[in-house]
Every structure is written in structure tokens, then in C-alpha cells.
Length: 456
Image (cartoon, rainbow, N blue to C red; front, top):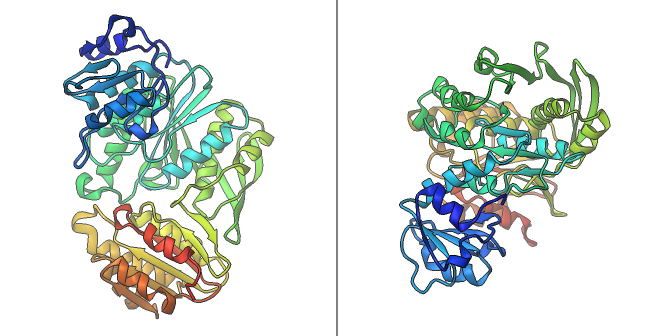
């Protein structure tokens, strides 16, 4: 990290430096919260979790080369320096905000109720054709993960793409105060965390808190197919993208090449680009459009944009296609809300063969839960899903909605264990199987079973 030392950390946070004087000026590079991820020179952030207390692993962190620890209590027999603070979470946010301001590079923030991770990876892939890009990894998109990401910035980076996820009012403002994005992308206003945010207007209000932390030269990149975003005035330059003709950037001739790739033509004032993204899902067109906007702002050539997008690769659990030799699995089990499940079902519907959807509970929908689960089932029926398999209490409503809308083959199980036991009877050779649910439903267990030999 640029100019960050245990002494500077103590000054920034108002914390107490504990250690020998000679270590006060040691250079600190990068920050982690899991001691197993420590690399020499890192700052190890001791976080008290529900089940694990990071302070208990400070010794291991020093053994692995941590330059300093950030702690809320004294570390007995510490093997290196540490800074004692009242709250490690509040302090790491202060440090992350300070560090971000040391870099004069384009910073792109991304949020949305659906598609933000895909868009983040697509934008980073496009920019990667020319620039050294830092991007959010894993699920580091919250008030702890974002500062850890910012603290990964170093002199090599020429751009940063930061995913920003929220679940309540005020969070986006706190994230944006750290990130200070030059460009802010919103992929969609949808039914995510609706229990806390109330309705779609509440979601819009929460997501758009970021614009208060952008300079007058900032740019808002918004999905113009979304009714609320189309009419929203961010108070700065606004560029829209989508499939509808009124957008500044639009996609036409969107085509799936089986489950392997998506192709489309992107049109804007700068011309036409025929692009191919080697991944599954019609939703990729929106992410590619957002990437094209950023590419134009960054000065990418058409060839660089195409090359960058062609390097995109989905991560595990996010529309990742797995061909087992017996079936094809679309592993999209990292998370789910009504908008993302609808998009996944629509993408599944255009693929040839017997289409199977294994769906689970969508959480944080509050009083809207039953209605939205039923509507999801009806969506499965209208998209000609041949077999619907569900697990979880709420997903019973998905089955009811599917059958009431004309679906013909639905199975519901109370637990994943029961569903997994029934898979050999429900899955046929050459099936295309979509697996999707909220992350806490642990549908990765189902994906693992589907991948194993002997399913038939």
C-alpha cells in the first residue's frame, strides 16, 4: 500500500500503536480478514464474528508474515506490532477511504439488484484488454469487503472496478464515501432486500445514495430499460444502455450459441460492434453494453473491446456451465431474487433439449414472498420448463405457481438432502439443468451431486 505503515494506521484511526518503535514505519501492503489469506506485508484485521474471533488467529497471521494487526483488544505475546482501536470495522473503512484517495485512476462503482457481479467482471475484462485493472473478488462488496478491496490498490493499477452491495438505507452512502467512484453503474432496480427497503422506489433511493459522493465530472451509467432508472436524474452526465431503441447504447440480434456463448451487435454513437461472450445467459447482453460504455469512456478500440469481452469467464455459482458427459448443469446457485431467476429461466428456455429448473427459496422478500415465489413458478411454466424441482419452505409457492400456470412436472422437497436422494429418478441423460436459489439455501450441495458419476 502506498505510504501506509502501522504508525500511519494509528494516526488515521486514533488508535494506540503497540510494538517496538522500529516497526512503526514498516511498509504495509494489502489487508485481509482471514489469517489463512495472509501474505508477507499484509495488515491482518481482527474481526469478531458470530462463531470465530479473528483475534485468536493473530499469532498465525504474524507467522505467515503479517506486518501489523488491527485489533479491538490486546494481543498477548504479540509477535509483531498492532494498532488497538475501538472498532476494527469502522477503522478499516477509514483506512480504506484514505488509501483510495492516494490514487488518481478511474474508479468504476457498480451496484444493482441483479447482475452487478457479472457486470463487474465484464467491465474488468473489457478494460483488461489495455489496462492493469483491480476488481472486487469473491463477495467483498460490503462495508468490510470494499475497504479490503481498496487496500489492494497499488502502483501497478491503472483502473479499479468496485462492486458495491447493500441491504438497507445508508449503506450505499457509506460505501460511496470510501470508493468515491468517477463512474457509477446501476444494472437494475429490482426485488432484492425488499423486506428492508420496502418497495422499488425504496431500492432506487438506497442505490442512488452514491451520487452524493461523486464529483461534478462524474458519469452515471444506467440501465435505460428499467423504468425507474430511465426517468432518474442523477444530477450529472447520464448514459443509458439496454435493448430498447431510446438507449444511448443498445444491443440487437442477441443470440445464444447453445449454453456456451452469447453473441450480439452493440450500437452507439461510436458505431457498431459485433461481440461474442463465451458464457451462458441473455442477461450477458446488458453487462456487455455496460462494458462497452466504460470501454468508450476509457478510449478502447473496437478490437480491444471485442478481445476483452471474449476473455470473460463466469465464476463458480454464477451461470457457470458444467458439462458432465451425462447432463449439462447451469450452476447459478450463488444467489437469487425474482428478477435474476426470471432472467435465468428465460435464458434456459431458448436452449434445446429437456429443460430442468432446480429452484429454492428467495430470501428477504418480506410480505411479498408468497406472491413473488408464485410468480416465479408461473414464469417457469411460461418459459416451457419441462421439469421443476424445488427445495425449501418458500419454494412450495414456486411449485404452486408453476402448476397453476400450466406446468406439468413439479416436485417439492422440504430439504436438500431429500431432493438430492431423488435426483436419479428426476434427472435424465442430456438434460439441461439450471440450479438457482438464495446463497444460504446451500444449493452448491445439489450442484456437487449433479456433477458426480453415477447419477443415472
